[in-house]
Length: 312
Ligand SMILES: [Zn+2]
Image 1: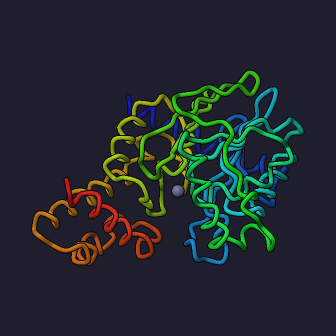
Image 2: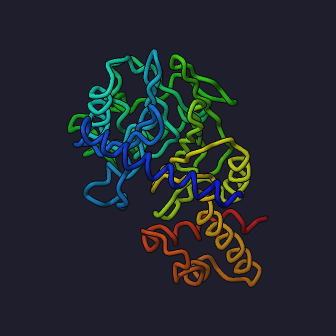
Image 3: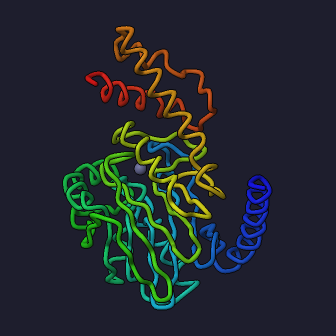
């Protein structure tokens, strides 16, 4: 029965996605926008490295439309991508943008914020996000200047004015969003957004699919967060990177398997007295789970895990 129900929901998702693509391509063919659930529009980012030419369009970003106003969820890795997202919104609705929600600090989710400033939305993020952005403004300007503008200043990188400390509801007019902050996991400032009407989870980078996860927070923290995510009531999952999933089980499967390899193999290496470079050299070099961009990111993940586990 459970299998039948799952197959049915996957079939529904396929139909929904196909019809949505046809619908969305009419209104926003230039930004590859999909109405993945009722009034939930997502743009799926490309799988490219940070050094790649098109590094500003790698994250999944989008928006949700209520009766009163619109909430944007992440703004892309450049002002240009932010503008494209805003243009897509305006092809669908003239309602005001009341919230711009950033799921976390990474450039590919926040550098488009400036494109929305003239709409005067509330910028919303984890309680740690404002400090994190303020501390990283110089870094963003030096590393991602081309994603902003020739004469970009620190003030062009916009921090949240609403900080989320606990589960919080936002009202868009006959549509409620629940925002949930998490302790250090993928980053130090991860939040997720749930559209209560459609039970769509916008997971930010707490979930990666296809593309290898990047660990910048805490592996043990992230594993605990995964257990909390599993308890959420959701019907559809939009990861921060990779394709949309019909359930949390599907969305989390490969990522969890990978984290257990990282955790167990790194613990073994430390117990055997291996140095960090030896651990990096030996753990999952073969890319057992066939992640995209494995060569690019995996060594960094092992190093980060080793540093976290070596004093436990
Ligand atoms: Zn991230």
